[in-house]
Amino acid sequence: MESLNRMATEIVDEAIDFADELGIEVYDLANGARVIDFGVNAPGGIEAGLLCTEIQTAGLATASTRLGEVAGAPIPQVELTTDRPALALLGAQKAGWELSVGEFEGLGSGPARALVAGEDVFERIGYRDDFDFAVLATEADRLPNEAVAEQIADVAGVAPASVAICSFATGSVVGSVTIASRAAELAMFRLAELGYDPSKVRSISGSAPVAPISYNEDVAIGRTNDALVYGGHVHLVVEEDSEGFDRVHSAAATEYGRPSEDVFEEADWDFSDVPEGFFAPAQVTIDVIDGPTHVQGDTDESVVAESFEIA
Image 1 (tube, rainbow, N blue to C red):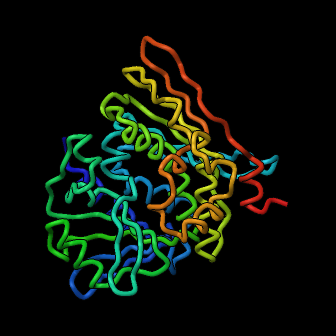
Image 2 (image 1 turned 135 degrees about the vertical axis):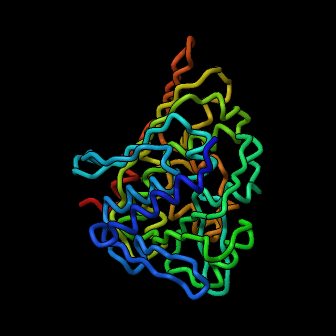
């Protein structure tokens, strides 16, 4: 398999070449690491969000937008499709790297995780990357500095000058777009947690509405999660049937029906205390090859509309 980080590096170079057109900004840190601001101080935009999603999935997924509806209001939807779901979504896109360096706190997603391969999911997909460059996206309300880049380089086993960090705040256009693209990834991870072999998923498509922007990070985190938990749709084509398919959707969680911000506040914003079943798309269709088609869950536009403050 081609290196995920090599493929992502090529897309990062494309983003840098079109930085002005995308509304993003590029910074070279003193240690040689490169920071691409997709939506912390830079305005970014829908196209920047789609390209950031492509970087996070190492070019193995196609992301696009269409105009859909939430409670009768026109709202953009992000659609993502991949025929390499284990690598694209679990090996790259998943936000599985918690970063805490000085005052910097953020979540890391993207193919640099595969250079470390420390999460259980990498054993399940049977992949570990080996490349001289590391590409990571950080979801945080501030830009990473030299110390953050050095920690990423140290853990990933590369030189600081070989690190590229794509940064965005949750409360940004790019944040809303890239998080809306994760409906399929949530379904893949939920399946893996339930013991289903990720390699048995042939293809997957997901969609979710793009949450309105809020510069209050708590509100932004709540809205972007509501877009997935109550508005996310996923379709999978799989090789084998399973009794666990009825637990892949978010309605299987006891917390379902409550806005995400309320659920997170009750857990004191410690996401490890939120039952994992809550982090799932609202509705899932699982098409078993030469077998049944399971349709589980349903969307709840009333929760999404309340979260989005649709008047």
